[in-house]
Length: 498
Ligand code: UN1
Image (cartoon, rainbow, N blue to C red; front, top):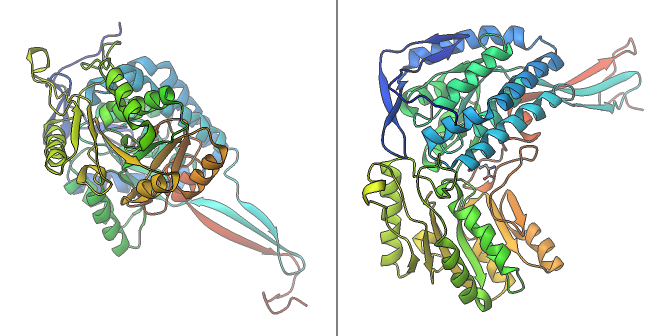
């Protein structure tokens, strides 16, 4: 078994290719046992400013490096990530808690993104199109935006960072990255890999610290031209309004209140598997997690019975043990938040079928473990059916028809992911049209997004942009339309067209 170091080592910011120490640090805890694993810098606005100055200078040169060469470095980054997949995965479990199998999956998502964007270096397609005038050529090209700021969450500390930074880098931008304070090791490892892969200094810069200090400084910095943020709805709104004041491009990825719909003709065994995986994987701490099950009334009893039976097999514990299925919750305040929702669910009249409490016996004492929880007889407007809990809590809502299922699915302020289990091809196509979410699954749970498709959602989930896929390039590039007139005379558009 690969050893991972645990200690009180102090991490450094990574600015202009150098590791820079800080004056203030904060301890980072292993959610599985409460041990301090590392100390993370608490940087100030002036650290952000210093990083931006270097990034700005570096960007001028980086933008002139041919994109296929930028992409070759991206390919090396992917290769190094692949070589270190096991080490990265174990560190990820250490700091985030997710079970090792899922950690491997997340690291793979980052590797996939590296290779995908490495390929993009030889595309970055624009358009060529006829001009309305004679002897005139028209095209559109993508140009980098400049220095971009990325603010990433603790629940997918490496995958989401790659969704944002890799397209930005291949497109010729330089990056200031504020990782979540809870999960700083993935940022250090990724910076090390970029360094070893030969990424020019100043192209990727890591500045650790609080959102209220480092995040705010990034949002307010006039030389950061784009902010790409994944996190809570409250913070996202604040980021968006500040960016609005600065006329700064901002891409937001926020919460979800995702549902699995189980129709009367569904394969119930498959639906149960899909629900368990998407509701209790990562202990429900995914933006895409299933937190509502909308079931046709004729199958409700059967579904509940099978879910309850399978939930008994979900082993809870330290995610580094291969047999564990449900790892810890990230921290105490997340546990408290989940507990509050359990109380609200009970008060509002939902029936608690399983779980609903924190594990506190001797072997779990020091970690943050919450038992997978199932509520039923939930009505669509109850608080637990409306608000994001970000924990292993599922609410069952029963409906009488397909139309009602769609309506209940859409009756929330978020719109990230949705899923339907049915064998009826007509319902499949109607559902993919009518479900108001950025991601729709048919006969699979609500998680499992692949990196070459756009990731994001409607309504309160975002502000119209998408992470990953080709869509990410739209966030990190400006369109430039170029007209070349080779007629040798002045030709006026819309006028000299006869
Ligand atoms: C997130 O929860 O913020 O589809 C990201 C999924 C993962 C990504 C989740 N590939 O669940």
